[in-house]
Length: 296
Image 1: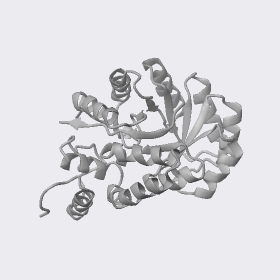
Image 2: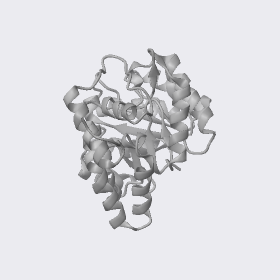
Image 3: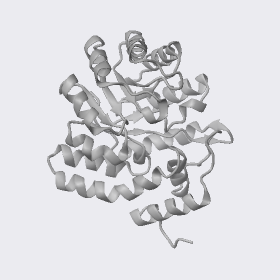
Image 4: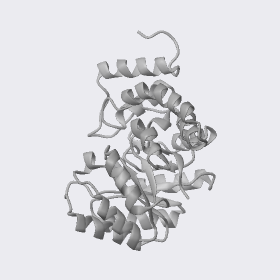
């Protein structure tokens, strides 16, 4: 089953179109550097601005390129249940190993509505489903009782990506759902604290640029070397802060451009970073040892 360091991979663009050759390169870079899973079409993959055809193409390309070397967990969420069902069914048909389904955003369903939404998605497929709880982007928290009810009633709802920032809630979910229910940190800055309270890994943004280090942190912790995990975490925190200085994925895409990995091109309403923030990002990359040469 899924665990460890999983990258929420960016979707590269070129002249307004999805850059499929570059996307394949980024996948190979991730696998070469020890990533243990890939999430295409998540928040970091700019799923809100992809057409349905592009979304499906990105998932299909990821599955075909990965070739079962690591799990592919496709982002398939939507604030329309029928659309989330269709995207999840496509991911299953394409050969994805699982689906990451975000809380419906904007329309603010009740807890009953959330339960019915996620149950409808889970019932429509056989692949494992990971819930994605990120109240800051969706205006709705999946409460512990709702998570526990879904875990009990839907055998293929196997875990949650927790980006609520609420460590007590994560503890409550672990207690309510048991040890077999998979809890992933959805916040790079909280990876170590989440591991310490029973998390099994992280679905990471910063892994787009430092996959080896994110994997090393999780591996060290799971091997019982908490001192090593803490050392890696302490080194990463300033870079993580810079990667989230503006709305994700704006800074991580700019970092990847600065490092020669891909273009920082995005689609509106996401836009180019402010110059002052770019300078802060450059300093963080330089201090981490990623950006060589003199800073101007």
